Length: 308
Image (tube, rainbow, N blue to C red; front, side, top):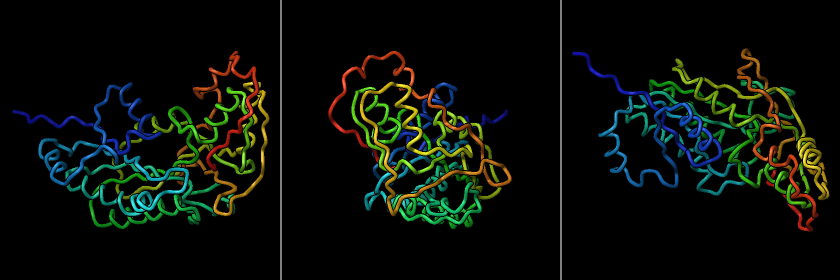
């Protein structure tokens, strides 16, 4: 009699965030089985986790680790420690429970100031993060690297460049610019000269799921388009598309802990995985802006966005 094989499924760690919500949506569209774990609603005790692992076969699971603390801003102390050390502790628990395949989302902010000295960032570019988020994520990557050297498992670490799209936090630059434009508000871009490699979240989650396969060791890849566009220019495109009546002010103000340029090299030999540069026409707010009358009355409030 043949023994039945466990059904493959995906464990999504961080399913309530920007990336996680899009990944779960894609899994549903593919009719694939999945389990979600989150920092806010996950297992509250070791015994609860043990009860789960005793009744579930995790040997066929692939873990997509998307959880991160303080994304795009200044992480709290707890967020910083989660990025730096908490991630690897959870990976250890998952591995002990039988999971041997991991895909982990990193960030281009780990490269930090190094991006200003390289037109295109490769995986061999030495990270020089100066912001707390990028620094904590890079320290976490180093902890993951040390852990991987001691265990037998497959780890693919993807440094994602500037991901944007559906479910993105409203205080990020593109959603907040659309909101101001459609609402007739004035808008100030405080880091307009910063150049970013914008990529669409729908393409990113498809790539994550399509790339699921074992690797022999820790594999580091940059997910990027290789196309740089200034934050100021992408907001100007939104302003033109919506025929916004609010006043747009683009400043070249530079934050000392910010980064002027973060653009990846998508060539495979440079450690890149190519995804197309983000097309604003695919943004959920783009179609809403066509023929909308919401900009007819200029409002007096000023809209600002989180640094990019």
